[in-house]
Length: 394
Image (cartoon, rainbow, N blue to C red; front, side, top):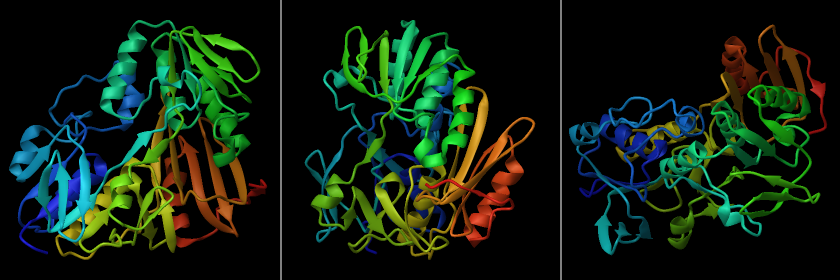
């Protein structure tokens, strides 16, 4: 690697982890983090929970909301540049372009993340989105003046945000096509338990329908029913920001940059990490797409080490925590399906075991941390679940 040092595109968990790992592993030369986001790097998980509920203040002291205080970057000689996107990568010249300025790199980490997918219906631009801190501010401000809300989409972000809005005192309707939240991904029985957590906060769940339009009075459903509300939130998934990578000729598949377990792309000295990466996992033995905070941190750690000349690979089992209302739900999985599952209820929670071809491929827990930890090892080793699973046809 030349003396040009490291350039990181993106200030989310993957990008900041890459910069930190690079310095920790002895990486020399300048480190520049380029971000279109105008805010100091922050934690995203609280945005749909504590922050939305008004229980978390914006204090840039490195605690809770912000990843690090400003002096952290100064102490590590990391040049953090906000507010302007990277518009071009030249892999031959080893440069990136920002606001007309060409910045050289010895190694480049693309941690561009993903953006929220807009609601593709007439009036869909009226719906608020939730991904960045700026989005969360708009949503929280709107909620302060609202009495009712419709949340579209019952993924984890939709469930978390709906519960948080209800806990603020709003009358909340959660709209989704599935009979229960995430039935296709987690199974109907697991979805019922998630639904119980959501509705316990006062949320009304409307299943088997989709939104056909949004106007000033609320949303119109495909069965002709109109749900009046003061604000609409579209929690309808995300799309990875891989456009500049594709334009630079990197190998991109389904909007994700293809990388090895070492986070190397198809171009020399270029790495990718986080939501934008389609990375090979050595434990899984295949490429795995993830959109979880901890996995982004793990990707960045590998990319930064490799950029500094230290060998590292991604082998961890993907996983994350979600908090719906006051209840934490934890999930480990490869994320590419299962053929059998079993729900085990406990006094104050549950565990769902998932298998494929007799091997554990996922575990979903509520107040069952021992099962969550056990499941991680079983998934990594490809061993059977500790209980007999029930065929689900998924």
